[in-house]
Image 1 (cartoon, rainbow, N blue to C red):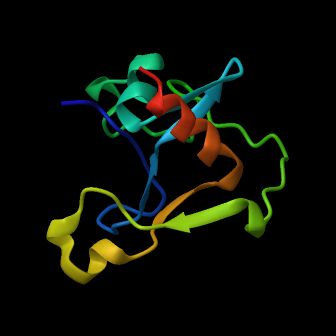
Image 2 (cartoon, rainbow, N blue to C red):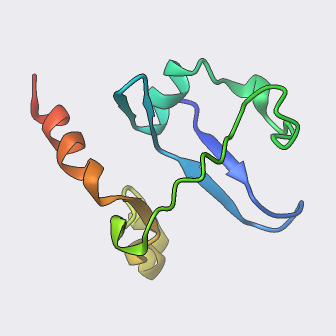
Length: 108
């Protein structure tokens, strides 16, 4: 089992969060929620931590504008149990990362 970095974006008891699936760290793509958490040494000690204080984990707005055409919406993975909700295009990622991610996974 791997840890995941979910950032809750709304008030308590309101189901709204973002799963951070990948980052670029020192020019290297760290893709996959488990790999990301291992690379940043994220574990359950951050459960329920207020991320707005910047004390444990830092999220930064660098002023980059990400246009709509650069973000792709894709079907969710591994949620067949969710019925019609499984086909919702609720998996978002930058289109430019797709080729690099796929190429890396095909190497052995």
